[in-house]
Length: 404
Ligand SMILES: [Zn+2]
Image 1 (spheres, rainbow, N blue to C red):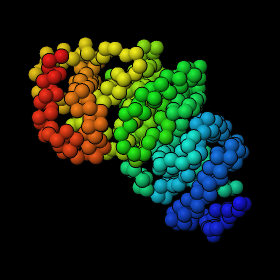
Image 2 (tube, helix red, strand yellow):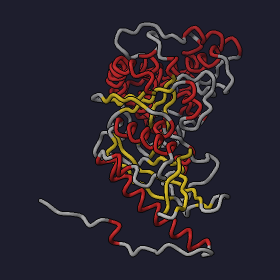
Image 3 (cartoon, protein in one colour):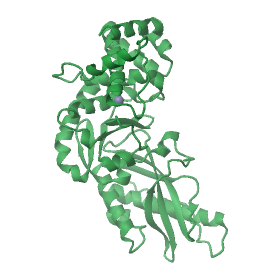
Image 4 (spheres, rainbow, N blue to C red):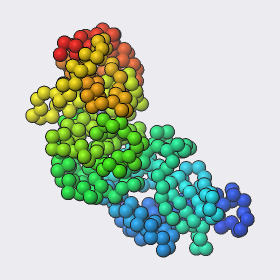
């Protein structure tokens, strides 16, 4: 079947450019219209692999914006972008310098897959009025403290995506997409192979719908680690799983932590978060922290050829500090020592191990889904999965951990 969709530009009556001294509202309406039109062309160029079209709105002679557009174009093409729907949040903002503007982009995007759930990136672009029309002069990370009025999810406004700030090299496997800053390109083959192995383990512990289409892993260098997503991870953190949309969690891992001894453990732990946490609204809540991390460590221990749990050493330290009456231990502080952090993870790990041992995989995953994904509380989840109050199960859990 052949059909030609009419160009979007032709279906709306264009506002003429306002004259000098026009009110702000008239200027905003015109700038908004011009930016939207430019972004439609930009997206068309990106998806078609046509850089000239992608960069058509760039200010002529502005080398910085041209370099930035080239970097973004290469990176997004490497990520196999399949969707890049851009809209502007609210009105363009007039900047202090006369004739310059800032627009907030909301970009619903998708990589590799031809269809995926809503996933919105938020960043800013800068524009200048010129005799030839409005021209793009640069990009900026969106101010994490500014609201995003029309974002679908309140949380996305504060996240900077890796491809906004860093040129990436990418390898797509059957179950994973691994992206590294270009200077680590040589590590891609090894990391992709290890990521595929980790995905095969994590896939066995999937909780809830929809299925994970493909795990996305972004490898950060030290500078990116502070810049990507919400910045500022705790100092004991080696990787993070970050919800970016209702059904999407992206993984960020620190390159210096990807040593031969630790890579598989770290990747399996983070991919386990993706497999078990989608659709939840309770990720990061203190009361279920032990369950979330305990599950990820438990899945990490299901890798082939694993014996012995590495954080076992830290449990004694923690148990000597105070009597453990509940498995529901709080997360480590941002400045916690590795010993203290490992001890807390160990409590979660042994609690989850106890549940698998006592109640089996299906009921334990059901309990996790109730407590973490549905947020019905530990007791409600325990009643429905185990047929017992959480207080009873928790008491047995804590006694088991004390006996280790
Ligand atoms: Zn974790």
